[in-house]
Image 1 (cartoon, rainbow, N blue to C red):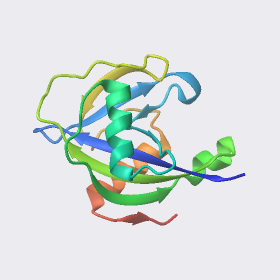
Image 2: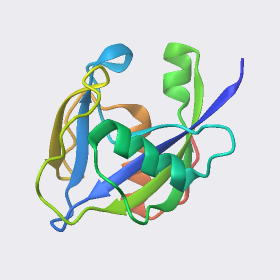
Image 3: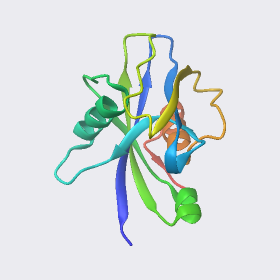
Image 4: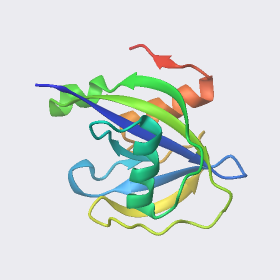
Length: 140
């Protein structure tokens, strides 16, 4: 068993809303921010840019690392330990991006970070909590 490193990218628009996707596949029916696993030799920022391009077809210009979290509830449920590197990026449009990987996501919405849709993916909830509380590390 190994620990997997992933990125979770909080993409916000000019209204302070967060971009969320409704997951399909193995993590359905959870809502979540976008992101994915870090490839060997890849920086967190490069991973964030690549994953967002692959999943929803937009190019992030300057994602910033804002925090770290362990996703232990998911580990207890699935047996997979993921450490999330949480990043923040601005998106200067209210237009919804188009899902590029319908096998991973079935819907995309802009949402207030204060009223997240349920059920919500643990890594996504942790990342948004870190951002809102301006903490770097979530200790649970």
